[in-house]
Image (cartoon, rainbow, N blue to C red; front, top):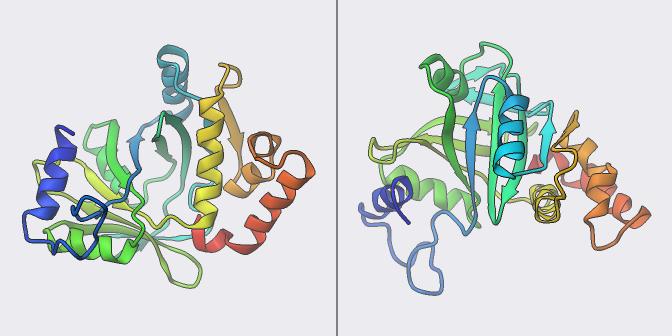
Length: 241
C-alpha cells in the first residue's frame, strides 16, 4: 500500500483511534472496509469509458443516466440540484467509477472540473459500520464536504476533504443489500467480459436490475433472476442506491 492510501490510513490512525473501536482479525482497526472504488470525474463519460475498455481492457461499463435517482445532494451544508450520470465496472476486486455532471450546480465534481482537473477525484470505501467509520474519519481531521440523503432523510453517502498528503476526496458509503446486488453483478460481468458491448446504458439502477445483463450473471438464471431483481427494486431500493 503506497502513495495516497498509505497517507490516508496514517492520517486516520495517527490521532489515536481506539484499537478496539473497529477491530478485525489482526488487531488493526477496520475503519474503511475491505473493498474500494477509484472514482474519476470527466467531461465526456462515454469517451473516457471507451479509453478504458478499448485501450486498457477494462469493462464493460454499466452506465446509469440518473446517478442520484431522487436522492438529495448536500454540498458544503447547502442543498444542491446536482444532475449527473455515472458508469461502473471492475478491474479485479477494485471498482472503477466515471462521473459526469451535466449542470453547474455546486458539487465536489464541479469544483474539481472547474479547477482545470479531470481524472481521479475520490476514493470510495464501503465499511461494515458506516457511522463508526465516519466518526473515525472526522476524528482524524477529515472535513465533511458533501452528503447524499434518501427520501426519509437518512444519510446515504459522505464525502470528505482530506489532508494534503492524501491528495483526493475520500468517500464513505454504507454497503446495503441493494448496492451489494448490483455491484456484485457488475463485478461478475467484468470478470467474464468478452470485449463486446463495452458501454451498456440504463436510465436507472433499477433498469439495470431488470435487464438481461443482470439476470445473466445471477446464480438463479432466467425468470428467477428477474424475480430476485424485482424484489430488490420494490424492497431495499430507496435505502440503498
